[in-house]
Length: 325
Image (cartoon, rainbow, N blue to C red; front, top):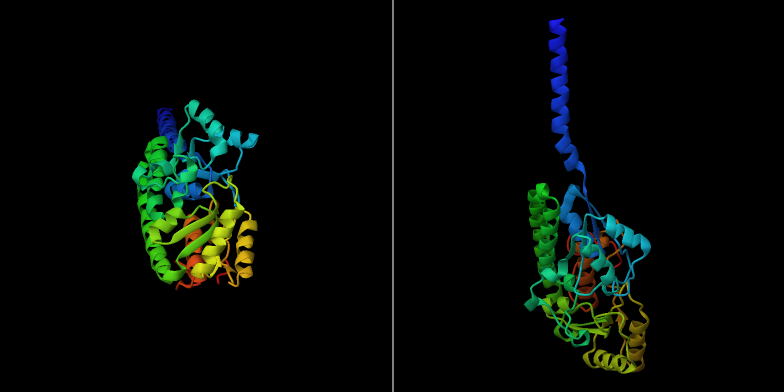
């Protein structure tokens, strides 16, 4: 009888020990629910989070964040998230009220682009004192957003802080290599062709980083309208400088870009469509161009090749799948 009791006590102790040790593990196995606004911010969060968080994005392929209005289901997703990551700098301007509501409930709403130092931001005249939000166009600036994501996830999940730090450092190296590649292929564009004309002014940070003049038909926000005078001025620029190509964008109508091509043709200068660039949204989910690195790789490789530079068709790491010139 005593022997049976000892065996029973031993089994009970083992079960209690198992439950005790499994409890913290079970708690840690619950992954953070992280909701980002744009694909660029979501991709950054996935790189930092690894397996410790479930990351999703509100806006998908081809969606313009300047014009995006949240739906009821979006509000529900914002409410359920453990951490909300947004670009900020008024990129998602029509969602400001929703963000304020979420933040007032005590949930962290982190504006990752606002981690970029003020003296490294660009303040265009048409934004009335506000900063250009398209900081992701320069990988050397996007590393600041990387730090903001790392700190936000570490604050929400202190047990994962070391993992988040390791993942962030690994991704920082990727961004450094991408920046070096972009500099090399864009530096190869001939001096007379170093003009990037796009549907809207989303590439100023890229231009400043790599020494390329950037002109957008619309302003920084796609809410602005393209005037006839502005289009005529850009046509004159294309003709005078013999610029070989202009670029539509995947998230903006190409109507105005086509007008430039037709205007230049009427003045005897042939301008090609250099291919659609990713500006405010990335490529399709599950593709290389549907990642931040693939997005930037696609853009700089396409720009270089269309403007007469020297870039490999496969891009940064030979992974480009979209047709190249």
